[in-house]
Length: 74
Picture 1 (cartoon, one colour):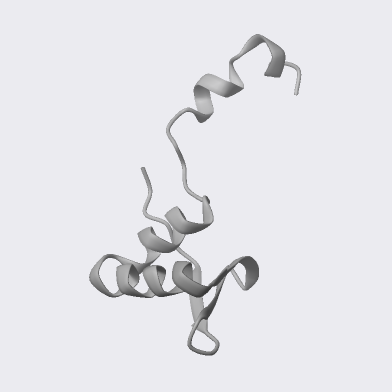
Picture 2 (cartoon, rainbow, N blue to C red; picture 1 turned 45 degrees about the horizontal axis):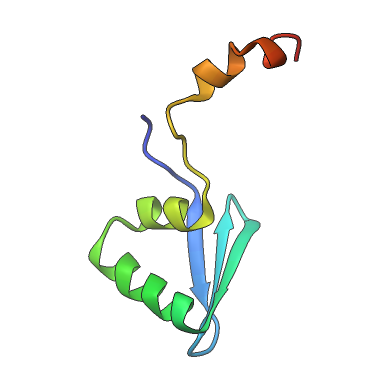
């Protein structure tokens, strides 16, 4: 699985964090979630943490979903 790239975060105020992916807004975290995110991003790989928090990461089932009968003609 390729390593996520292109994520950035900006802390605005004590309890707001904006996360972007390739300069497009991905999510905004407020309050305790923002605090928890900031603590986690300092101790782990920031790109992986931001991918997980935004839900923008591959799950490994893309090929299986593509081959499903209801998705074959798409």
